[in-house]
Length: 300
Ligand code: ATR
Image (cartoon, rainbow, N blue to C red; front, side, top):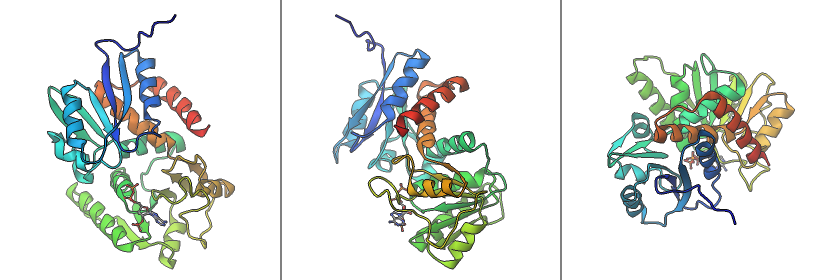
């Protein structure tokens, strides 16, 4: 008989609030981090039914949780229950990470940080002076567009099915930049499937898909318009990680492009959340090793 000593009276409690949570891979990431760093902690999925978010948050705080992640459909509503919200989460209107310290709740959004780190590590490229094209204008696009602009891109073009949403997002990005002292407009919008979009796609060095087109189970669709042919010098990043190879990424690889899926972003947004909860930086040799394993696990 083997005794399981992993959970004790002093185990740090963390988890994921959402609905559904059945398919989450975050426990694998966080519990591996606890394990490899020798921290006595655990991460569990917590399915919260509609209308119960406030009670759930109160409960986690009362039960002494160190922190938790937040996923659909609660990334916006969660802000109502925070004592403090980071500038980034405020700007985006969403949080995916909550830290509980001294009885106070702190909201963060680590999605964009996760994306930037994954992009840098997996492509070996920065956004500095690059022409970047974002497909989609939803919540993910907003998080990434602002960060890409702040990373020094020369131009961020937002191509979306619904043009008004692309214009709104481009305007929001330019406003944020204005506040940081930049006078130049660098975000632009275009409706997808048009000659204008085609011209933008042809002239940019980096294409990032934030739409759900190509996501399981619709694995035969691509967010790129038919008349556009990728060039091998273009980098294609798809935030989708299921399937690991979307039609977009398969097409990009066939054209000789560097093509990366969203598994790295998922890993690094989780790593950042973990660092916030534990108040420590995970050493590079550990994060690199673990990300390799995690990406292999998601490919399988
Ligand atoms: P998220 O928070 O993941 O970004 P979202 O806010 O719902 O999700 O945004 C989804 C994005 O995918 C939107 O840009 C949406 O385009 P619209 O603004 O026109 O709705 C885009 N999208 C979703 N399904 C699409 C489809 N079948 N074709 C083209 N774009 C699509």
